[in-house]
Amino acid sequence: MAFTCKRPAASLDGHASQKRRRVVVGTTYDYDQESCLGRGKFGAVVKARCRATRQLVAIKSLHDPADPHEVLREARFLEACGGHPHIVGFRGVTLDYVTDELCLVMDYVKGQSLKLLLSERPGGLPEATVCTFMWQLLTAAKKMHRCHVVHRDINPANILVGGEVVKICDFGVAMSMSEAPPYEEEVGMGEYRAPEMLLGKQDYDALVDTWSLGCVMAEMLSGKRIFQAAEFISLFQRIFQVVGVPDDTTWPGFTSLPHAAPPPLVPGQQSTLRDLFPEETLSAEGFEVLNGLLTCNPDKRLTAAAALKLPWFATAAANAHPSAAAKIDTMAVSIKEEVVEFAPLMPPRKRVTAKKTLIRKKAPLIVPPAQ
Image (cartoon, rainbow, N blue to C red; front, side):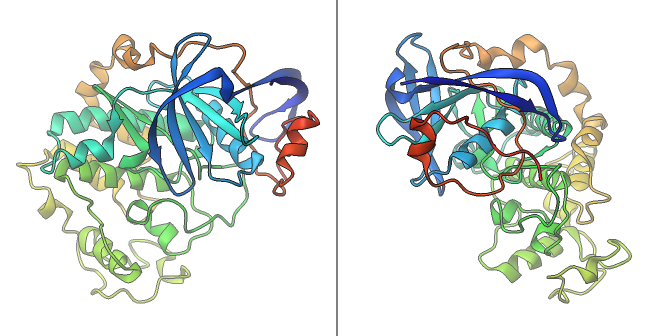
């Protein structure tokens, strides 16, 4: 079962283009499912093989009932960031021929998640490896942010490791910077959520991703979550113990944030981050990156682009040859029958529940333009 439809393309700023794109959707009948790669709160990912080409892919389906807009939203974020060697490749959207649900088809990455890798390395990874991985992750973040996409859920479970190459995946809770605030506070995994999100700041930006990458960097070095906590208040307590207690001097407007009640620590307490990562564990150049990413005030936090310019990454950048970065992309073969071209996603105006009617009447698979 397949259909085609035409629609005007749209750009991130919401302006329509005169170019019309052909949209082709296949079905999961075109694939042989081989194994389950993982299950999460919102959906599952399976490993499958295309019957026509025998190429391996990863197919993600949301838990029922799946909203077509949610699937297409994630699809457009993946497409907007497509072509980067450290972001999982996107192939298109397919229809589950049993449930009539839309699914995402992505490149299959042979390897494991960073979460699983770290569970096998309780002592953490060598600094040189962490440097290489962080360079790749920050280049991916730089790409996302230039495409006006904020991931909002960067954590080891959403980072795939294939040999010496890492890739960011799962754009399920990503957002476009063109969306107007207020933004959601409770998205992503708590221990990797930036302080401004925890404090209820409703107009945060792409810097929430670089904080998450700082948490990932610390975890790669030590083998454990740096801000692991069981309760909401203890999470704040842990963050402030490590990076210091902010005030309106170090973070203008801090006390006026919705959840910025007096912290359970002494205001002005200094950072203990260097004590956790002494020079025997992390060089001065490496600590400059970690400290810059784990800065409470987002206005002083390192952007991905700024972090990549620091001395720690000089060697990693010099060794990043395109051929090496592309090793894991050899499976990304174009399948014309399955590739769907989407314009970058705008927020949907309302949920669609009549999925089957949408599909069977061959209505255009369109996400409404920006409001």
